[in-house]
Image (cartoon, rainbow, N blue to C red; front, side, top):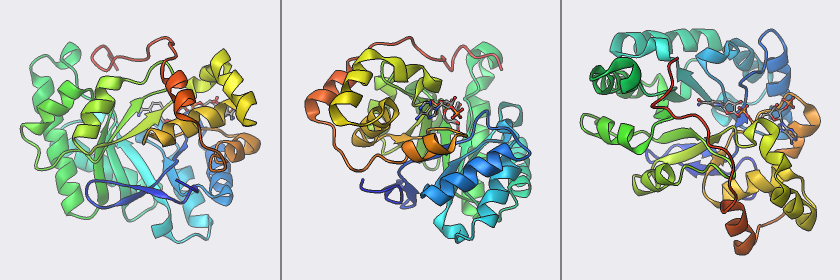
Length: 282
Ligand SMILES: NC(=O)c1ccc[n+]([C@@H]2O[C@H](COP(=O)([O-])OP(=O)(O)OC[C@H]3O[C@@H](n4cnc5c(N)ncnc54)[C@H](OP(=O)(O)O)[C@@H]3O)[C@@H](O)[C@H]2O)c1
């Protein structure tokens, strides 16, 4: 990858710009619109939002006002947990389209799998029914690609039993010290692109001493070291910031390459685990 506008290619042939701009905890009513506008100015062409973030209209406004052709910007949004199931998921997609003010969504994700803790034996059927809606949304052209988020290999294996096609993307929590290797392996084997949420550990990963040492060695920032490592691993990072200098910093990843030894050192770091999708109760 040599620039923000270079893409990974999803298994359905759709191109997805290699760094996504995160918007979780970006406030609606101006802050998100300003941040997304800044990101588009800097050169990001991929924006990640969700119905749950309550800022889809800001994202849509920034996209429309940018003057950049719609087809040059990749917009992801997500179906929230309250909207699982066939009918609900279809209605949720219509609502997101309306709130975004867009005629199609580039990538639509099931935000979290229904788990057995909350739904017992029905979890598998709920996920299958949500996915059936996603497949239809693709066929109808309302979404260009369908994917999931926070799905572990066993959730994907369950989906596989009834899916006409597998998700193009799995967006998971990933950062140095918490890579979720089993999910990475499963996704690689099934041509599912992995996106990393909280790639910077919401800022905490930037303070890892080994990351600081590498930042000095390469003359880059800790955030740039982490994001570059993800790109070199074939993982699409989704850094979020509302701060113009950081928005630019997180995009400046293309003038250096981490050595194999330094990549291995980053991958060997240990940090506290993140959320377990089988344990969530929201
Ligand atoms: N699918 C899911 O379940 C899920 C869950 C969580 C997140 N996500 C997606 O993934 C995106 C990223 O995750 P995230 O927002 O949780 O965390 P993140 O991107 O790891 O971290 C964002 C935090 O780091 C700060 N930051 C950003 N760049 C920095 C830099 N260069 N130097 C120092 N601090 C920096 C930001 O501050 P400022 O904004 O104040 O600059 C913000 O507080 C989200 O925005 C969302 O789009 C998805």
